[in-house]
Length: 442
Ligand code: GDP
Image (cartoon, rainbow, N blue to C red; front, top):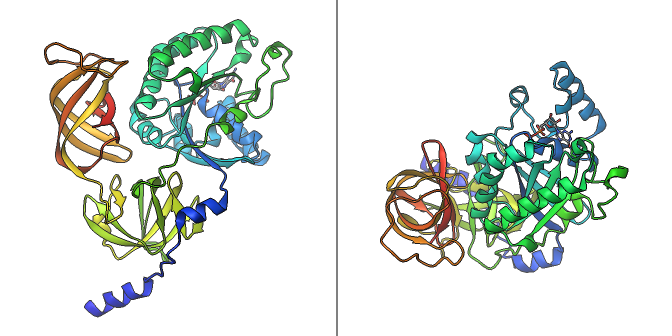
């Protein structure tokens, strides 16, 4: 048996080309790559708007849409055809909700986009967090129709905005949607813009990082094409797609040590018996590299790499990858594990301090700590200090015993098992099926 194993390993032994990955990347003049997450209240029109975007960019064709239309009409849900572009599974369609982060890619001349779709349903917040932690910006969809805007604000609009902010998202494009239902009223648009921008700036977004656009996903006005509705002639700005394209290229953490959090693990491929997927958060990687899997502390060899589904000898931070591995037993790999260079492993912590924004009451209690696909049980053991929201300075006085929703504090977490986390990592705390807070590992 020993001999067989040696041969098997020898078979997949790969040649490392010793590339200067940063130089290769520089030569490429790659398109701007942007990952974004779509947030907003349920029924705000998120799926419809994204379906429209893909349809008008010709990512999906007329025949496919016609098929969806027929199916939708058969089920008596005619207006949902566009929304289905993103929801592939029929089970999801029948239930009318998007279950997981549907990864969808599309390109324009300047930018290659990945939509990390965020569903509006409460229970699906963990998926949204996984999306938001990989997003460069968010598209917040607001239902402008009378009454719905107000109930949306009380609903998920605020919660989602706080959440993406605490996951490190800095820029938001606000689609003030369904303006067709209010005859493209400029005063309605202005009123919503004012309220949302006041809220977003108190939530910590800088106003220079906010953009507002009047649109209607269902009719396609101001999505890819500028509206021709005479009632909307007061709007002279660009359509949504231009705002998405003008998102600043994200400062890529190219020079930092390699970090990739595993999303999924695939086994049993004929050519590639063991593969993992995830976004490269930091650093560079090339075929032939030896990597370390944390927390297992096991090494593996990179047999081959796919960047956005195309084979590549190398990859850099910001790209979504599939890595085909050899020289490791799959039992050492699970979703949420982190891939590092053996020379600079991510620490595995059993105790950590987190600067947390409370969404609901936090006291010393059991919590689940989430970072991307990492879900780990732990306990808030101490509330160390309450912090001023704006300055981050410690609020003088005695130590808090209870954090109220909206409070910012430094808390001590003890984990049941060592988890791969490091300073600057964004985590979310959940308890009893609810998101109780989100914050930054200190
Ligand atoms: P989601 O829950 O945010 O993904 O919302 P959906 O995309 O499923 O849309 C919810 C409902 O609003 C559906 O009936 C859509 O047809 C409708 N809708 C979406 N966008 C628009 C729009 O721009 N104008 C109008 N009038 N209705 C829309």
